[in-house]
Amino acid sequence: MQSLFVEGSSVMHRLPARLKLIVLAALGVLLFTTTSIPLLALAVIATAAIYLSAGGPLRQALARLKPVFLTILIVAVFSLAFNPWHAAVVSLLRLTSLMLFAASVTATTTITQFIDEITALARPLERVGLVRADDVGLAVGLVVRFVPDIVSRYQAIREAHAARGIKMKPTTILVPLIILTLRDADNIAAAIDARGVRRHVN
Image 1 (cartoon, rainbow, N blue to C red):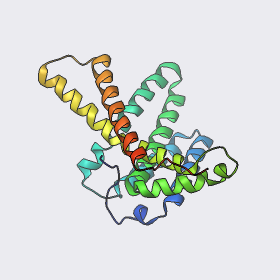
Image 2 (tube, helix red, strand yellow; image 1 turned 60 degrees about the horizontal axis):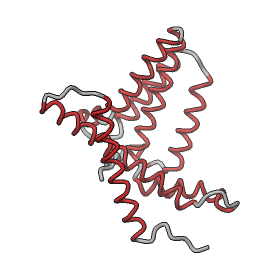
Image 3 (tube, rainbow, N blue to C red; image 1 turned 180 degrees about the horizontal axis):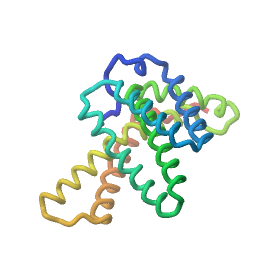
Image 4 (cartoon, rainbow, N blue to C red; image 1 turned 45 degrees about the vertical axis):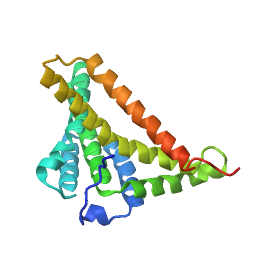
């Protein structure tokens, strides 16, 4: 499977994974404490600079943001359709800033670091019997790993449609995408079980 991680030695790369996750959570709270468009625009510029500083060719960095921009575009269209322009712009800037910083975190944090931090954060819940920390960490790690693969499959299906001259429709895109994703999920689950990763001693 592919990874969203980008090799580098930027400041973001050197920061502990836990600190980056805490800052991401704090940013999500702070962005919703203001409706000032200039402040939110400044946050977008700052998070964009942080993302671009993560390293790698500029073209590849922008290419990784295509799914992010698509999500933002969809949200912006719906927001403009049902809200005043000021509220729509505020929502758009908040989402853009948050997603840019989240992209920076995923680009500078390995899957192993993600799993370790999420597992550590879930330990208190495990002590009271609510969850199994290792399973939570593994689940989050797999989700992060699956994202670039799903995007790659979507691009491959879209290119296949274009090569055959088939008009793109939600059903012709989503059905094969879901089938391929579920097939790989089954294969990964079987591999996990075969290695005894999910076997716990009671």
